[in-house]
Amino acid sequence: MNKAMLESVMKLNSDTQSDLADYLGISLSRLNAKINEYRGAQFFQTEIAAIKKRYSLSEAQIDAIFFGGKVS
Image 1 (tube, rainbow, N blue to C red):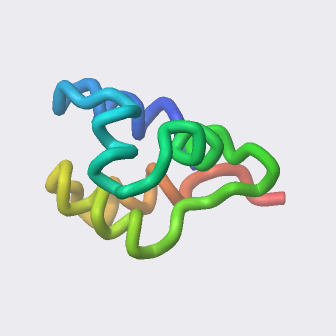
Image 2 (image 1 turned 45 degrees about the vertical axis):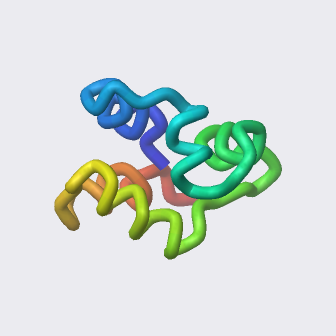
C-alpha cells in the first residue's frame, strides 16, 4: 500500500484520518492500522470502493494506492 499517496489524496480533499474513519464506519485506530498495515491489517474491497467514490479516484489511482506496494 502507498500510504503517502493516500494521505496526499486525503489532504487534497481537506480530510483527516478521523474524517475518513467516520465515513468508512470504522474506528480511527482501525483505520490507522490499515494505513500502516499493522499486524497485516488491510482494507476490505468495500472500503476501497468507498474511498474511490469519496475522492473520485480513477482505477489507476486505486491501483497505485492499494496494489502498487512491495511484493514479497
